[in-house]
Every structure is written in C-alpha cells, then in structure tokens.
Length: 348
Image 1: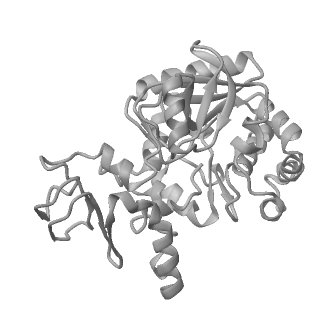
Image 2: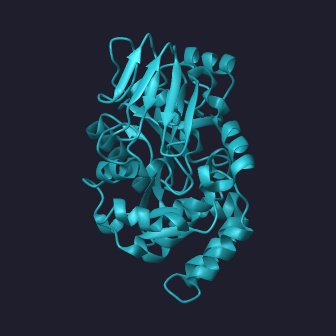
C-alpha cells in the first residue's frame, strides 16, 4: 500500500513526493525500496503488487525497477485501506484464485528483518491451513496513543483476536500496557485471497459488488473506467473498521522485531542517531549552539546555524522552513491548512 500523502512529515513530504518515496532516516534507500527489499527474499519480483495513487505510478517504477507497469495498481482517489486491499485482492483472484496475499504498508521501519520474515512465513503457513485473517501484532514498549491495539485471547504464538481498539487515549493506553493482553496493530495482514474475498462479501457487500466489476474488466479496454467508477462510488473505510473488527476468524501472530510505523517527526527522532546533546542533525553543515534534544532536517548542501533551541523540530526545504516545538507536532496539519489557504497548493 503506497498511496498515502504523508502529511505529518510536511514540509519534507509533499503531495507530489510523499513520505514513502523519501529517505527520511538517511539510510540511502526510500521507505518503499526498503519494503520491497524486505520481502524480496521470500516473494518473487513478479508477484509484487503496489497499490498507489495514479500520480505516483512513475515514482513507484523509478524506485522499484524490478516491477512491470501492470504490477502497479492505480487509485484515482484515496479511499482508505479497505478499497485499496479490495482492488489488490480481486486482481489476485483473477490471476490465481489459490494465492495467498501479504498486505503491508510501504513506509514502515523494521530493524530485525530476518525475524520479521520468519514470522511472516509462520503466518503464511497458518493462513494456508485455516480460513483465517492473520495480522501481526507488536509488543508495546510504551502507552502510545498513536497506534491501534489488538487484544489477544491467550499467550500462544498464534492467538485468536478478542478485539481491536483504535488509537486509545493515554489513560486507556496505560491500562492496555499494564494488562499484558494488548499488542500494537502493525497494519500487516496475511490471508488466502479467497478468505479476504469472502470477508468482503460478508462485511462490505457494496465493495464486493464494485470490485467484482473491476475484476471482470481487468486486462480489457474497460479496466480504467471500471476502476475509476469503483473508487468514485465506494465508501472510504479502513480494513480494520470494515472487516477485521467484525470478523470472527481473525488471528494474530505477535512478535518483536524492531518495528515502527515512523509516522511522525517524533518517531524519526527516536530512531535517528544523536549527538552528545541528544540532537538528531546532519553530520555536515549544521552548527548547533546551546541546542538540545532537537531534530533538524536540511537540504543537501545547506548550511544552518541554530542557537538556543530545546526540544524543537527544524525542517528546511527549498521553499518551506518549519520550526516548531516537538511537543506541538500534532499541529502540522493545521500549519498545512493555513499555508494552503494563503498560498494555494504550491507549498503542500
């Protein structure tokens, strides 16, 4: 899944160059490239599908030259994760009705990739033997209010899911952490294609009807119009709300493999290398004085002199400079709206 705009990483992430195509962590690879290479040892190149906005098709092929153009499924508009997954599932159903599918975001960080692939293989084996919708849970390390939570029914490696809870408040997140039955929802799903298709038919019948029409049109001149019609008519809904929270055959395999959705500048700060004053800043061109616990992002070749900041985010691009306290980064979308109101789309 590679269609998001990554608004929380503004002004680095832009409408025409969103987060998944950036190297925000300074690894030398974009997020989508890292995701491809993470799965490449277990998935042949010809079996990858990328669902993205139609504006990003060329970017996907630029970052993943191993893929053919027909492996990039283009959404005309974003409609959240359920329609995105439905588009891919019905495409796979036409290609191979016996296929299993792994659904993953394109912009996550996983540090222990070998352990991660082992867990994914276990999920594939379980899904092959059961009509199960598998998800991957992450052992929580803090009461984070930015993640969804999964409650498990026992302490087995693969456990039936009791319930999903979307982004709780801090008090509830602390209770979840102390309880020991709750895991972060990674947003990674594994199942047989037939199993998720059956779930769409049962829980999202309108999506089922629309995307069966898309499946019939695949590979014909009617495909583009069918896709555009399906997305224009379908309801915007997440796979969690639309299917996972309602289904009675959802299982979770929990693990600890250095996962983060790297969803905010704050999470980048957590994973970034820091100097002795806890600043995450470029190794060259950044001169810091009396500055602590801050994250600084600069264009290559740019020189910045920063003095007197404590716990700030400083992001400079060719046309936008943002400076705000780390504790206020939840206001970034408000900043974007204000800039958009006054200057239009050119800075977003």
